[in-house]
Amino acid sequence: MNSPFPASIVTRPSDNDTPHDLCLANAQLVLPDQVVTGILTIENGIISDIVEGGRVPDGAVDCAGDFVLPGLVELHTDNVERHIEPRPAVDWPHLPALIAHDAELASTGITTVFDAMRVGSIHSGKGRYIDYARGLADELLAARAQGMFKISHFLHLRAEICSETLLDELARFGPEDRVGIVSLMDHTPGQRQFRDLSALKTYIAKKRGMNDAEFAEHVKNLHILRERFGAKHEAGAVAEAARLGAVLASHDDTTAEHVATSAHNGVGFAEFPTTIEAAKACRDHDIAVMMGAPNLIRGGSHSGNVAADDLATSDLLDIVSSDYVPSALLLSAFHLAHIWNDLPRAVATVTGNPARAAQLEDRGALQKCLRGDVLRVRTVSQTPFLRGVWSQGRQVG
Image (spheres, rainbow, N blue to C red):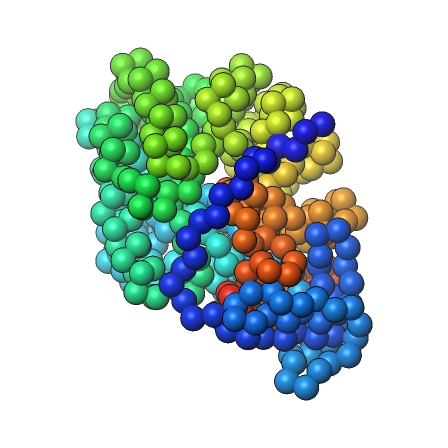
């Protein structure tokens, strides 16, 4: 079977940061295909040497047998939105929110993040969504250019085709904006993630405070938008992803037909397929499968969709995303290591596999000449906890 990852890898720009030197010794190094006791050296922010053995050179950090693994690569997180709107309709100043978001991710071992922002606004009806992505992206990119972040940030535009303004909003972004991913979202009620309308109603009622009549009107309005704009917006978003040089992702594929359409559109990886049928179809089309870490840790989907554990045991899981719980990403790697009895394979789902899916060739593994993004991890009762986080050899957590 062919690999589900792109054959052609494109180097992305590095963050404006001062790289550092570091030597971690007497560590259990989680390499791509094995775990060995050894020494990892980072010079000028790049992994320069990996040597087996338990000695501790002068000036090295003695890891005392702790695991050392690559920094985590996060492709889809709602965390930045949670920081700019900590409660429904509560706006928080963006720059402090971005700094707090960055620090939180660093503290959980994430050293590369694709910050998800919705594009595609709805200005009619109750509970409407308002355009915010362009302004927030400007603030994020300015903060990154000024060296205000601990970790590496890219943009992930969540293109909601069931909306009024998607193509206008996408047109405001250009190749210079470092848009790494465009994902195709279709949250039309009654299909994909929200096949069960009761799950959608619970979610909307809690977030937007709708009564029964308002919810019914909301569903009706979304169906009207899908009928008016769906086909045009889907085709337009695919074209815009190509213009931006971004990887295209699907979202909540449910049927083999959904996956066939995703393959036709040139999708590189599938975010959160909702059925085992869709996950199997992704395999047939060489599309990498991403599932949410909260699904893995909780033992099931909060929306009643397929359990990530079931995909893992069926060899249908390639990438894990923290989704809405940043700390779940590291936890999920060790959870999968227990299922598969293979720590390198499990760690790859949160490091090398997402890096390749996002076409980042300079990170995601403990290998010479790659970025010195590394974690020191100890486990207690099979639960990992971080003892150090380094980005380009600079300690950030």
